[in-house]
Length: 224
Image 1 (tube, rainbow, N blue to C red):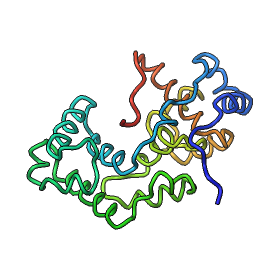
Image 2 (tube, one colour):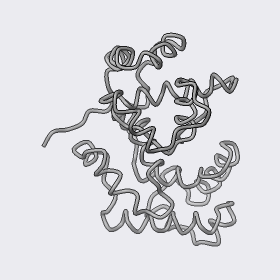
Image 3 (cartoon, helix red, strand yellow):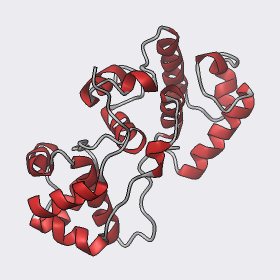
């Protein structure tokens, strides 16, 4: 069974995109090369990463980090898993600032982990990205976007295009000089020319959206 290595050749992606899309290529030259993400080489635990993604949802980074720290203290571990989360009851999680919906999501994640439903990092290396999405989106509180961020920033899959992401849609609006952001369907069609390097195209489109918005630092797209 073929295995997918984590990360991809960013120079090859740059060369392809610059040839395939002259408008995007002009912006890419303006922004400069985007190198490999160091997270592609770091080991990580998918269950822990998903638990943190749940806790970060709809919160500022600072507020979410505070809540995560409280949960770690309550369970006595920096590893968020079925066994460690099982050390505290729902009331204790709520006391940490975890909402009722997020508590239910964490319990669902833990139950699925205990049942062997969450692929390990090793298993993911032999799975296509669509199969990873299909395996993880049934988890309460985990949507396609969250899994796509894991595919891009943790697993380094080269051909991911989150068509529902507002930042990417805004980037295309800027590149193409549109009056409105493209719909997800239009973005999917527009992105055909970027394959098999749509992850790199997405990274540039986020940079373009931040650049035109006057952001001083890149918008954070995923949680550590």
